[in-house]
Amino acid sequence: MSAQIGDQTAPAAVTETARRTGVGPGAPQRHDDLPPTRRRRRRANGRPVWEEDPHPVGLGLKGVVLALVVLVVAFPLYTVVVTSFSTQAETLRAGGLVVIPGELTLEAYRQILSGGVVTRAAVVSVGITVVGTALSMLVSVLAAYGLSRPGSLLHTPLLFVFLITMFFSAGLIPSYLLVSGLGLIDSYWALILPTAVSAFNILILRNFFMGIDNAILDAARIDGAGEWRILLRIVMPLSGAVLAVVALFYGVGYFNAFFNAVLYINDNAKWPLQLVLRSYVLQGASLPGGADPGQAASGAVAGMPIKMAVVVLATVPILLVYPFVQRHFTKGVIFGAIKG
Image (cartoon, rainbow, N blue to C red; front, top):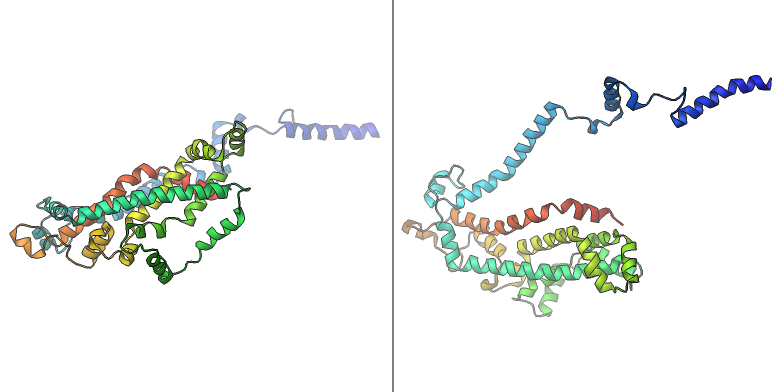
């Protein structure tokens, strides 16, 4: 009786072993051993929909959608650039922005650059951007590295303070009273210090620093490296992507800022480029030292070409810097936001 039971259970045991190991008479047929037609069918049925090979119709629709998006983004830029190179008569015939270029001229750029106002404002904006970005990166990197070390002094309370500033602020009037009390009215530092630190950027840097393997840092400490050398020689070279992205965030913020200049700068000679752009292009005020619209009859360009030329000059610096940093966005921001 026991022998008969053993004979009946043995094939089942052999089949189970073959199924697990993939070897033997009861083993399932391997995917690689299937005919090509069945192999393709099984692969197609076993993958999610988004992993299937794209259909030609879908590829065509994607191309059309991308072309429309590019057209929607590029067409306003095209009209601004063409209008800035057009004459006053062309803008009058077009009723505003020029779409089809006619007579092109550089007179608008010569006029705004020779007046000195836009040139001085551009220098002020570039200087504020460079100094402000350098100061903000210095403070942010030091704060983020300190907060990324679990055993650092007052680690949890300082991190809590940074998080609070992301949701609550003192308000406009206390900020103005603080800047005024520090004697920064009509000072370039009033355009830098109030926005020198961003808690969001510090948290991105902190999370990225926490994602660095601790074995590398421990090996450096064993070799006698201090925290400053670890930060400068190991952490920062490994964090080039996130540092480039955060520097771009700070740089764009400083270059495009105009509200602080409206609040704290009363001297027109200290206006940044964005305030000149706002005052002249949006509000229609005439630039000190610039051309008078009534001079259009004597050959000077006025009105829309001048405004669009100022817009182009205010946009070009960011367009020149962005392509060099854009490739770091995925690695720097997304990786730094999810690590740790």
